[in-house]
Each structure stands twice: as C-alpha cells, then as structure tokens.
Image (cartoon, rainbow, N blue to C red):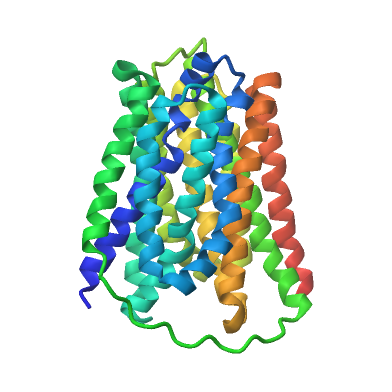
Length: 380
C-alpha cells in the first residue's frame, strides 16, 4: 500500500472537514448583524455543529464497522461540502442551524473513523506518520477555513465567504474520494470484552475532563474574538480580525513538541504547565494593546494544543487494549461537547458582561482542569 497516497488522501479529507466545521467563526459578527442576534445566539452556528458531531461520533464509528470505514469517510467529506454550498442560501437563522447540525453529524464520521481506517490500511508500523499527516490536515484546515472566510467576508459578505470555503472544501473532498484506496484490509478480530476496573475509568476521566474543559475555554475565547476585535476601540475589519487565527500555527508546533515535554517533565507536570500557559495567554488578551492581544492568542493557542495532545495521549496509553476504542470515543465525544457547550456559554457571558468576565470564566475552567490533573497524584 502506498503510504504517501493514503496519508495525502486522509489529510485532504481532514482539511475539508475542519475548514467547514469552523468557517463561520470569523464571520459571527456579520451573522449576528444579518439575523439580528446577540453574540451568544450567533455562536450557536459553531455550537450546534460541534455538539452534533460529538453526539454522532460513537454511532457512526459503529456504523463504519458494519458498512466499511472508507464508505463512511467518503460520505463524511462529500456531504458536509455540499451542505456548505447551501449554507449561504439559508432564509433564516434556524434553517442555517439545521444545516450546521447536519454538517456536524456528517463530519463525525471522519473524526471517529479516520485513525482506524489508517490502521487498517497501513498497519501499526507506519501509523504514527500517517496520523501525524491527518492531524496536520485537520489543523491546517481549521486555520485556512477561518482565514479564508475572514478575508472573503469583506468583498463577498458572509454568504460569499461561506460559499468560497465550501467550494474549496468540495475540491479537497473530491480529491480524497478519488485517491482513497478502494479496499481496506480487514480489521483484526476485536479482543473479547474485558472488565475495566472502576479505578481505571476514574483516572481516565481526568484527561477526558481536561479535553472538555480546555476545548470549551479555547472555543469560547475564539468565538468572542471577532466581536472583541471588530468593536471599538480596535475596530478591525473582518480580514484583519481573522489574522488572529494565524495563532493556530503555534498550536501545530506545540502539539508536536508536547510529547517531548511530557517525556522530559513527566505527564502530570507537563499537562499542568500547558494549562498554566493557556491561562497566561488568556490573561494577556485582556490587555488594551493589539500587539499584546495578538501575543496572548498565540500563547493560549500553543498552551491549549499542547494540553490537548498530552491529554489525548494519556487516554490512549492508560486504557486497557480492549477498551482503547471506547476510551478514545468518549474523549472525542466530551471534547466536542465541551466545544459546543463552552463556546456558546462563553459567548453569552461576553455579550452580557464583556471580555474580562469571559477570561475569568474560562480561566476558572482551566484551573479546574489543572486541579483534576494534580488530584490524580493521590490515585497512584
């Protein structure tokens, strides 16, 4: 099997999926103006998609075992792109939310199946590099989708920006459909279910909580970022405000370095450090200087992605072999539930109380996550 072909196809699928998932984020102020919404209501354009993704991950992973992982992946990249082309035509905000929820459900097939598909195709020996390419595609897609939508919103409006992102996503989806191998090797028989000690699930609950709380805080800050940056005294254009998403490059680098940090410091100190860096970056965004705000977004993004990488690896490494699939699925579910619930809650708080209270709330979530990590020292 051609490793490069498989990796490139899955990376293209990831780019398509995550560009679509978050493309409304930089144009939330324009959505709010178009439909007469407050920030909290407008942020539902993100929350319903990530929430429906979370709910659909486990059912679609089960379905993929019945009908084939490649088939589920193909539907999971083609359907969201086609729905994205319809999004600008939504006659009302409720209709737009229905389309976004459908996108989230469809994207869940890729999110829940892609790693297992790679394992089927390539085996464990070449899996690490392929998964790295997939994660790169996901993060690049998330960044480019936001940047593209932000820059296109000026000349084309929010409708034109969403159509442009969907068109590019459709091209990537078609590329993935053509290049994904037609048949995967049969998956090895699953190990017979075994009992997982309750103590193990308690320990695994900590990184799951870190993923949910961290993602909730992260998305809450980014959901409100467009409103903060476009309002006086900063008054940035949509294109200029969308440059904040370049901070995702810091996340790409920090997630790659997180493993080395955990090996050097130990998992618990590394994760607590990453969460502390995220809090510090959030605090910097409360400054009035645009340069300091930009630095704050870079720092919090780097810290969050490092924390996410360490927590995700924790779940995989600590779960018994026969329970790794369940554990990974639960992590993904809670991660995206945190995105939907936390992102919307944060936008509501920003709309009613302002940026300082939003930072206070998200910092409290991150401190709670760090406290849970430190509490695991007593369980050892």
